[in-house]
Length: 257
Image (cartoon, rainbow, N blue to C red; front, top):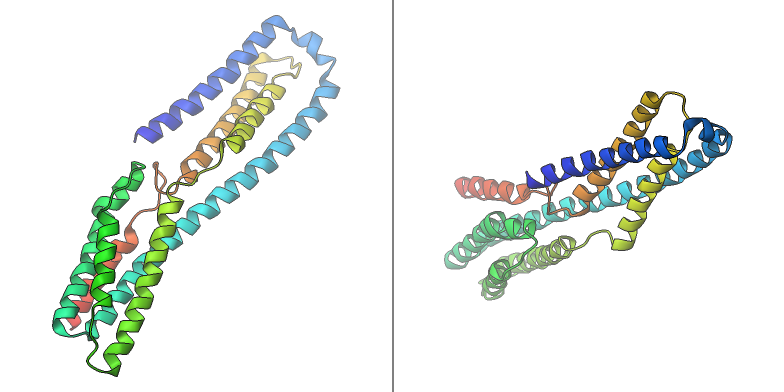
């Protein structure tokens, strides 16, 4: 909610600043004086706008692909956890209960603790500890026959993949666009909006509508990039739905058996 309010303030502030600049420009530089330069300003604004549109498109595409990658990675992590739970079904009763209880605990820790911590850009040892317990439990299984030995190998493979996806998720929760790229985006937006103010339009009202539309679109796009840039923070973020589905799968699997 706070992020949404901040985004709203950013968009409104950008529009207000653009319109204020236009009003000041009309007072210090008469439209009749600027009208003579429209033939030069027009092509220049077109080039600047095109370059900025291409830049925005690449940035938006990049952060959206990173967001989808983070979402897929989180789902794969939960799928691997389900695999560990199901392979453990063939273990000896004590081993089975221990591994499956730890798998349930892992899902609850992800939903109730690690996801809120990532949203707040914090970390702790709870997730690391339950992962270590899972490794200890699965590694400590003593197979009684060839079938259990095969199931243990499969469970260890799923656990290894789950740990890898978890490590990638934690890294993705800390990555974001570097400051230099944000500087390019913000400065490019300012230059694009300011350039649109240089036209010598006869109607100030029409010119204000034009500048309003450009400033609104540019600021809204930058806010959207900022929202998607951090896949585990903000109002637009990857949810732990995969682990909720995993808990449902655990319940259905236990009922069937």
